[in-house]
Amino acid sequence: MIKEMERKTILVASDEELQNNKYMKKLKAAVRLFRIDQNEWKDLIQNMLLFADGAGYRFYFPDGQPYDIPLVDDVWKNADRYIRDFMMYERCKHIERARLIDLYFRVMIPTLAETLSLKH
Image (tube, rainbow, N blue to C red; front, side, top):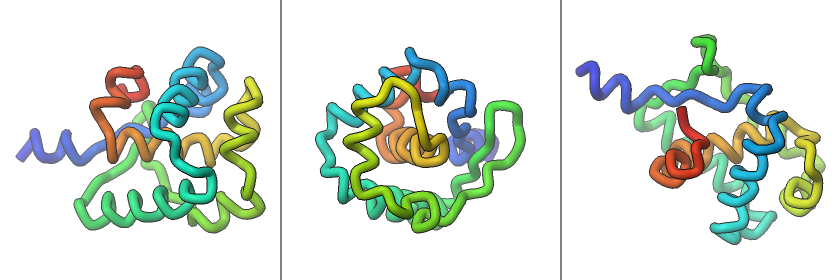
């Protein structure tokens, strides 16, 4: 039972991590590796969250505070070129979008997240 709870608990990236240049380079490497079209990210993230909800996943910040999942439509509003901009700029301009991209890898491809140290 405890192992099942541990498996269904995922830590989301903190603001500090998402503002760290080294961490963001790793996240961008993961995005680059999968070559997902920028128009597909919103749907992928929505589908991942539906999967995670159905599977009983719980999300927390590294400090133990629960992570309240935002509405993806709100986070992704006016973001047609977000992935392109995300890849170009050194600094993260939209923390919540980056957090959801990071969370996608943590939920759907945990071995990649662990390899790239995107997972705690």
